[in-house]
Figure 1 (cartoon, rainbow, N blue to C red):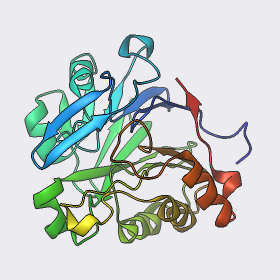
Figure 2 (cartoon, rainbow, N blue to C red; figure 1 turned 30 degrees about the horizontal axis):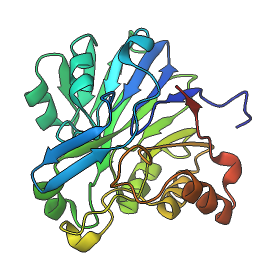
Figure 3 (cartoon, one colour; figure 1 turned 180 degrees about the horizontal axis):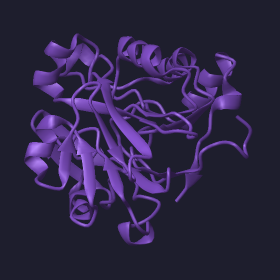
Figure 4 (cartoon, one colour; figure 1 turned 135 degrees about the horizontal axis):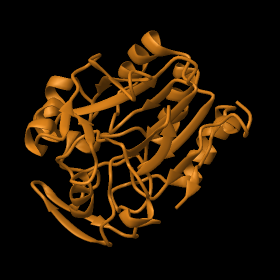
Length: 255
């Protein structure tokens, strides 16, 4: 894809990005709180930088693609407040039950048609840790990724908090090659979880995911603004350079 062909994606820090597709405006995992500490069941998450915009700066949002609702680095207080003004939030089946009537849960490979049927969003597997899904979910929760398709439209993959390249391979078998992949990265680790194993892709795995998907454009998110992200922008650039994929890496428009 040339620069002119690439899907414009605005990134705001953490996992939050905004893009237009099929006439609809999609926002991923909304996080707009100020920096601070967030107690979680097994410790503390610390946000280090504010978002590059406020919810009031975004304009109309038609759909939120929420990978999961249980962690504050994916849905914080301001993000929850924003959901009240959005017509539809697509998320996990469990998340939809917790969030109420404006939320719809998508199981693996379940689809919903939007925009008078012009856009199809399909829920796809995501594993929030380095082990089998049944071992991971009791500790880190259920997560969903998304694939967007439509006649005459590019194929867009939003990974959510996924650490499994096996899941990426299954998605590539069904939808590849992908035009745009919005990949959650950052190599987050916690010593008390899975012996410090990765709970979301690291930079080298993100490059490998791009290869598996045949992605023409890769927009990384979820690699800055939190202390538990152990790899950042420079690591992503280095990994994609080493893989010969730097021309596919798109760091998005900030703010």
